[in-house]
Image (tube, rainbow over all chains, first blue to last red; front, side, top):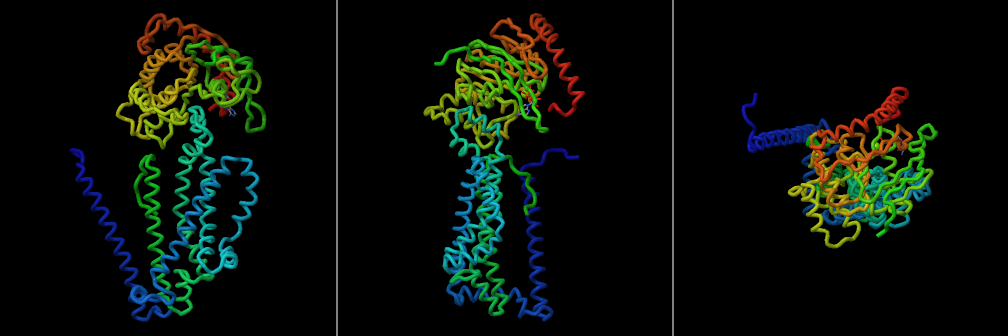
Length: 278
Length: 270
Ligand SMILES: Nc1ncnc2c1ncn2[C@@H]1O[C@H](COP(=O)(O)OP(=O)(O)O)[C@@H](O)[C@H]1O
Ligand SMILES: [Mg+2]
C-alpha cells in the first residue's frame, strides 16, 4: 500500500527510466540486426555482391557525399525528390480537402461526380506514371503529377467522410447562432473533419514519396529514384540501400512535422492516452 | 421589432418516415399559443413529440400539416432571433469557453462583443474558465456555456430541450435556480421542454401537459407561484405540492399509456 502521493520528480524519474530502457533496447535490436548482416556478409554466408553489407552502405554514402554521384551531387538529387514529393503532397492535400468538403456539402454534385470518382480511383495509379512521363516529359512535372494523384484520393475520401460525419447538432446550433453557410464550412465543418484529414496526411506523405520515386524510375534526369535505378543497373546493392536510407530519413522527418502540425491544430482534443505508437 | 403572438401552433402535425418505409406520426393536430414574456414548460412522456415541437418552432424542420408562427411570422427556415439550448451538449469542442460564448456575435458580425462576452461569462459563473475547452469542463459547466451562448444574442424566443436532463440531481437543482434568476432579468419568451414535472412547475408560468404520442395538448395549467422564485426552496411549499398533485394526476395517465406501449413494442422508444 502506498503511504503518500508520488511526487512530480518521482513520476518524472520513473518515466525517464522507462524511456531510457526502451531506447537502449531499440538500439540493441538495431545493433543485433545490422551486426549479424555485417557478420554474415563478411563470412561469405550472404553474398555481398547481391545483398550488400552495412559497411558498404556507409562507404557508398561517404563516396556520394564527397565525390557526388554519376548524376550529380547527392544533395541535388535528394532535393529534387524531396520537392517533387512535397509539391505533389501539398497540391493533393489542398485539392483533396477542397473537393472532399465541397462534394460532401453538395449532395447533388456528389451524386453527379460519384461514378467518375469511382472510375478514376479504380485505375491503378502507378500506370498513370507512364502516361504522365509521356505527356509531361522527363522533368519534375510528371513526378509531381504522379505524387499528386497518389495523395489526392486518400485525402479526398477522408475529407468527404469527415464532412459527412460532422455532428448535425453542431451545425444546427451554429445556424441558430447566426452562422452563414460559408461560416458553417469554415468554423464547424472544417474543424470537425480535421482529425480525419490529418489522419490521411500521415499516410499521404509516404504516397507522395512513392509517386516521386516511381516517376523517377520510369524516366528522369535527377532524383533518388533514378539513383536507385542506376545502382540496380550496376549491380550495386549498397547504392540501393544508401538511397533508401536517405528516403527513409525524409519520410520520418515529414512524419514528425505532420505530427507536430496535427498536435497544434487539434490541441482542443482531450489528450490521447499515451502508449506505443505504430 | 416584429410583434405578433410570440409562439403559435395551429393544427400542427408532423410525420416521419420509419425505417420500414411506413409513417410515424409524432404530432397530430397540436395547438397552443404562448404570450410575450411567458415561461412555458411542455411536459409529457418520453417520445411523445416534445423535441419535435421545438424543432418546428426553431425552424430546423417544417410541419407536415399546419402552421407554426413565431412573432406573427410563419416559420419557414431557421430564425436567428430564436435561441436554442439542446438536450445534449452542442458546444463547439474546438472553441474554448470564451469563443463558444462569442460564437453568436462573431457569426453575426457584431464588432465589440468582448464586454458582453465577459459579462455573460461572469453571469453564468465561468470566470476563470475562459480558456478551457469543453472537454475540460463538467456537465453543468458545459450547460452554462450553452446557456450563455444562446442568451448573449438576446433571443426574443428561447427554446430549451430538456437542457438539464443529463445532469446529476444537485447540479440540476442549482442550474434550475440560476436559470430562473437569469431569465427573470431578461424577460424573453421561453418554451422549456422537460419530462420532469417538479422542474417544470418550479420554473414556469404555465405548464402544458402533452398526451402520449402523437402529442396533443391534454391540459394547460397556470402556475401562480410568486416571483422572484427560489426554485430550490419553493419545492417544499404547500402551494407547490398542491399544484404538483393536480398536474401529476393528469400527466400520470399519459405516462402510463406511453409505458404500456413500450411494453407492447419494445425497442420503439429510445
Ligand atoms: N427524424 C425523425 N425520424 C423518424 N422518427 C422520429 C424523428 N424524430 C423523432 N422521431 C420519432 O418521433 C417521436 C417523438 O420524438 P421526440 O419529439 O424526440 O419525443 P420527445 O422529445 O417527447 O421524447 C419518437 O417516437 C421518435 O422516435
Ligand atoms: Mg426529446
